[in-house]
Image 1: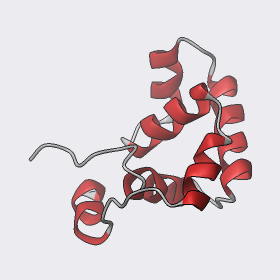
Image 2: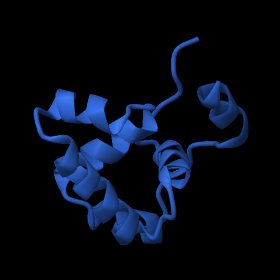
Image 3: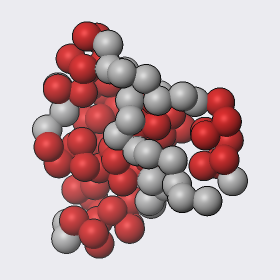
Image 4: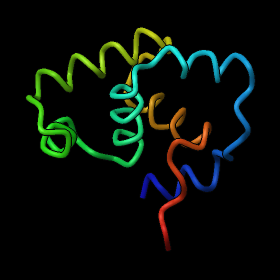
Length: 91
């Protein structure tokens, strides 16, 4: 459901200098976590995929929010879609 909503209202756009700079502030692992969050994965699912503890994922999520000035997971998902980190799901 959320994928259809994002596909309807959020168009991927080329990264502007500000967004590119913001994403560059993320570590490779944080970028991976952001991508997985954008795909709708829970912290537990991300932890299992990356072979880390749930607390480690929560720490990465907190750092992503701080570095990118995000309030919540919804903003992170929208950012992941709008920057092209996450592509539309196949129909």
